[in-house]
Length: 251
Ligand SMILES: Cc1cc2nc3c(=O)[nH]c(=O)nc-3n(C[C@H](O)[C@H](O)[C@H](O)COP(=O)(O)O)c2cc1C
Image (cartoon, rainbow, N blue to C red; front, top):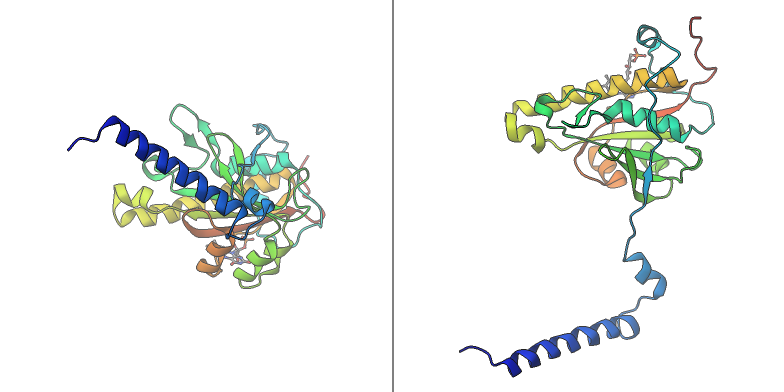
């Protein structure tokens, strides 16, 4: 039987009143949380627009290949936001916006990789410590968690000290389904190949910036996932810092 207009109005008013009452009860009544906690439950997105990357360098690609090395000791100095921007661009920056193609190749342009940056306290000039997610389309970072998680990440990486010492750690996660959806099981192989491309880009870009890094494959997957959060499975961690003594580039 169809409801009469008055009944509908009554049901509407009754449910609105119930909603108001439960909100008031939650705020001032039995549920114990104060104003500060209420603020925390309504997160605001912190987005950091990164400086435009540079496409010029003092050093040739050949020299970066010659000098590429896994380096596990860094100066106790911050890197700059420009350097972080350049590293993220080298890793996953978009170079052909009309197609969304990036600096590293991707099987079928399925782009399964997600980049997270674990910034140590004082690790990047003008950027608070925290875990950030790189958004290639915007060339921007989104804050996932505030605070210094570099020691937690080091513990999850079999206590490899360079993870704790580095100014930043890039954590590269893979969302396998983006690639296996198209290529089946073989897609897993493609994802692993792709992360290697990204790692090499980061190594070479580090050199032209006077930075140093090492790729890390030895860590507890679940522990890293717990520390970093985000989406996908962690494949690589790349600690990065200022190179001790700098590089001797050829004139
Ligand atoms: C897949 C992979 C995993 C790696 N995992 C680690 C690691 O967990 N810790 C580490 O200190 N180095 C790690 N490395 C770096 C190697 O130890 C390093 O590449 C090797 O010693 C050769 O040195 P080079 O990179 O300076 O040429 C890894 C390298 C690769 C390719």
